[in-house]
Length: 281
Image (cartoon, rainbow, N blue to C red; front, top):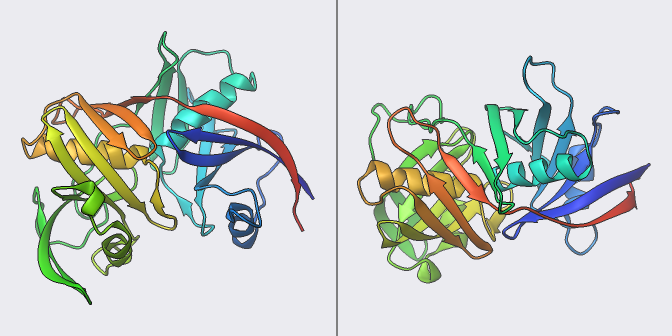
């Protein structure tokens, strides 16, 4: 079977995007894992699927699959690439679109400087909805780390931006143990659906640096929902003031959150790189 794809990226977080508005999506987990391989396949952090929706007043359905083939609820950088894709492919002529995801409906639009803004909805702090195992809802949760070279108790903020996130404040992201601690926490028993782990360095009240270990992928050059989660966690704890510039290895995003029941607004670029065809066996 020949598969036509578009390769895209949102500040270094890279994707392939498939148009399945005219045919059903049937790729297996094994096929997705093979395609994601950076030496033997196309290579990507996530696979994005454009589908039709059955919801009223909604334009598309948006599905996200990680490198391991698992389907996840949300991807902020992917959402911006989704917008660019449906506009470039003339699947819509609307300036603002509403898109169905596993975590709910999101709204996307483009400004005059071609930056794409995504209404990511309200952050979720309810531990049962994140999900995160805790009897109480707190701004920070202590967790014991038991690694060969790191045995200590650290504090982390926990919330959902449509997918679960843990945010750890560090002095220097360059010195953070992203691979080891990220992998340890990703599959920790406290997170029934695993978790994305962000390592946040506060530069100023309006500026942070961030590295993210994404579940099912590992560290990526950027993470849109991770940027939202980090900024929100800092604003909620009065460490940051909206709007917040989030610098990640792949580039920067602007995150705006007014607090309380307000939605999180994420703004940044999306780039289409190339198109191609690949045989799936």
